[in-house]
Length: 499
Image 1 (cartoon, one colour):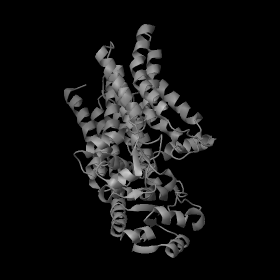
Image 2 (cartoon, helix red, strand yellow; image 1 turned 180 degrees about the vertical axis):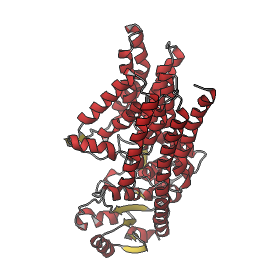
Image 3 (cartoon, helix red, strand yellow; image 1 turned 90 degrees about the vertical axis):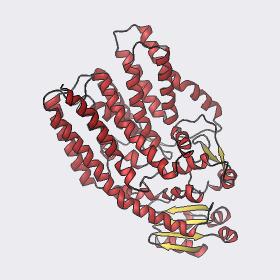
């Protein structure tokens, strides 16, 4: 490979990383579903001592919790950055880590660039990311980086073992799937590596294993209650196949299909021009992750409906990495084509984020006009979840009000702050026990909203896209104080007392 080509590939990776972050930086409020809720929790922890309302309603859990690593990173960032920059920094790091992890792993395994590194960047904007499952998305990138480091350095010195152990610990804190991916990959690599003695291979597994043992033990000791998984069901092969495509659906399924078609065509060119680097390790991992996906049932408790799909993203990244070795004379053209495809899809995401972010801003300004500082907010968000394409556009409003927690110190009824699950928990879980998302087919208002409970504990009801029945029901019991577009803010008697 020529010297200029060696320079071109890192530059291409850097350009893809920067372009991937573009949608995050051109909008004020990234239109993601769960992320505003996570940001609100991070802000509450970071400002817990300064706000009496936070101390009154919440308790900070012990440090030993999986799946909350970004909470503690966010707390650190809040010490010197405002909320908007904390959001942009964490989202950007999540996107960049995935691309750089793919690059590091390919460099470690093949000692040469491949088109698959950039092709895998096509998947950075996936449904999990749009849902705001940031710990999971960050964890996938962290797994790729940690696994690349584990593979790269032999023999295993004490210093390297410590670094690997710390990376494993970070994976555990960020997301349990990240730790599981790392440990599984290390075990498979050790089994397939027959040039080392059994003792050496076993010793190499110890650091990634040890990183999660101690925190797991401390977490189990700290559990205060049993957690129920709920009903399990297997979706069926057809649903599983559709689930792979849906994981990368965005705002228009036709456009998504065109991008996917372009990706497949480009994969064929990459294979014809650069071949497929043989990697028994990666293919074994891909097959294992695919089997887990197709066999694993979907769990019935909230937030885990997509648990089975969480093996798909790393599987696709690992599958693409060996594709299109850039040393066959057409590397410049292949490099350009892959960059153009990934960039075009990123621009497509950005063009959809711009109007959605404006709508979210209007929604937030309406709430801000009717709610007092440190107000207790009960959201009623009525979204069309049955139409999947509309749902992807609307879902960013489910927790968007949580973007106002850093500005107004609001206390939202649907804040993620539960014992044994999060880094923050409610002091009075009974006041949020009656809260539930209103989803179609919408029940009768009196079945979904207990007005007496709302009047006793909450000061404001924020309604979005209310049906006539829900609008009439809330108007009869509470005072409408602000109405703009699809957003309405009602005040309960508790708010009247404060005013």
